[in-house]
Length: 201
Length: 131
Image 1 (cartoon, rainbow over the protein chains, first blue to last red):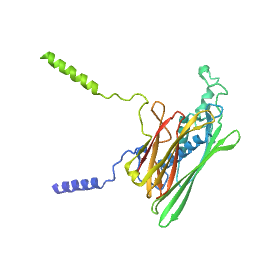
Image 2: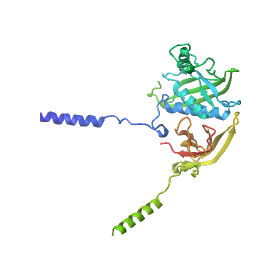
Image 3: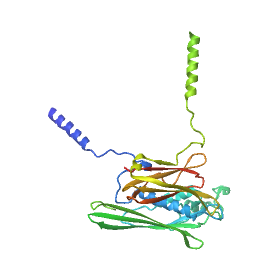
Image 4: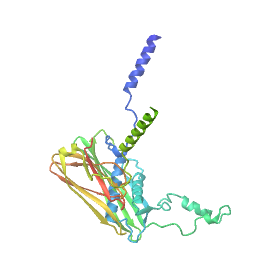
């Protein structure tokens, strides 16, 4: 019995010692951690930073009539081998443009329906006897977009010697909906080289 | 005796109050525009640091900063610019991460950053060696 207790205790100690590294928080503002071959939050931040800074510097998102432009997020295609929620990229751009005071995004329009369906749902309260009509949204108050953000994320895999190279290209366009012209365009390449054993999906 | 103790305590409190450093409460803090870590100076030098305000179609202007580094040998660099408004408060951009770059021996590279909002009027550039 005593022998079994010693064996159990030793086993527990050995297992505890062999445990993987402890879970910890990562501060995105000071992250020098290892890089993976797939796209991570640092890549989206880099692409969004470059895009927003270039948009602001070009003046393309500055309304010459004063006030803010209204932007709608169109299609951002994911042509990579990874499952990417492209909102990771577009949300950063939207937030930064909103903070810049130059662009506001509409959530009432979208290619696959409104991002926030409540804008229309709230209007269905019109003529309902159950609701105080003075608080119900009036006709003709929704704002149509001036600009549309669209883009594509591409991936190319190459073999370089005994390593693999994964190239990602984040391509974005800002289209003026009045003229259909792309007022701003940008591409951020993200190139990673690493072991052939690493996977990029 | 009691009066002596009271007087001593009063004097001590007065001295401590006089020594306390009041926190900075306005935007007159003197910030270095360029902060370079000593490890970076072994491998490269900052040869240029410019700032400009870009006129915008809506009548406002946006601060832009450009700097150049010349490498003495192949090296990696991490850099970040913090932006401040007239009150000395930080102006938030997309993220707070350092941007990484590689510079080849003898190469001069130019980097540019644009402020996230027209109210940004000053900045601090920090250069460090990535781990």
